[in-house]
Length: 260
Image (cartoon, rainbow, N blue to C red; front, top):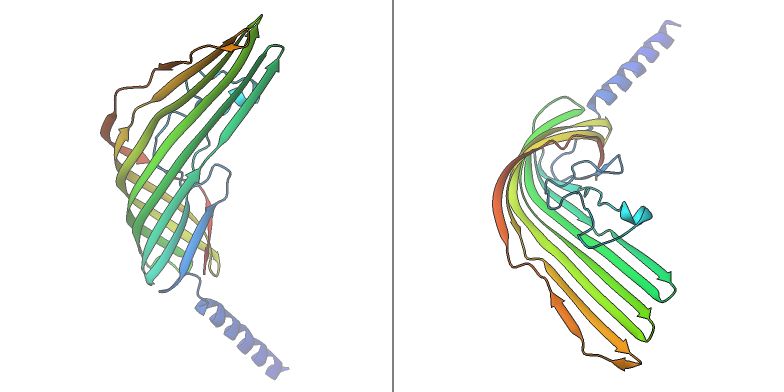
């Protein structure tokens, strides 16, 4: 019996030692990637390129389409550890939501289309500290750039007696561009070998510019089956804008990541 207890104690000691030596955090040569745990994403881009994603002036969507908004752009990150405590990171965010609404009434039909495109790319470096066997705190810096654009189309055909009028309208709202960089700090906690949860917060300095708006309306009219001259109205903007800003973007939430 005494021998049995000695063997059991030795086995338990070996198991504890093996668990203590188990590697949780990445080493040089490892690659990690992380994803949001929630729909809106963690680490939405620090780029405020638009005002809530509202449809442009002139759009008359109703119902669900009238409530159409852009969701924040969640960012997917990848990291390459070229040393145990140093990692290069690449961030990428992309969103291209769209909505279409068609209305058909007697002698009157209309189609509206609205689509946007948001792109974010960031390149940075992280310095990781010892922390604990499972906790990896870090600080870092990142350069980033991004762009945002929207496009709205209206196609309307109306017939009144012997007159048919077709109106085509296209609006490209002023495209936005951002270039800048930021400092950040965060921490990853490894809930299992090579699986982690994390948080991050940062401070960004950005240079922003806004291009010109394009707004063109083309009207074609037919009277008694005879096509009339085409008319075009150009209400495009004439002004570009640029500026710089210092923003505190607290990118706080939960993420889950994996080590490869």
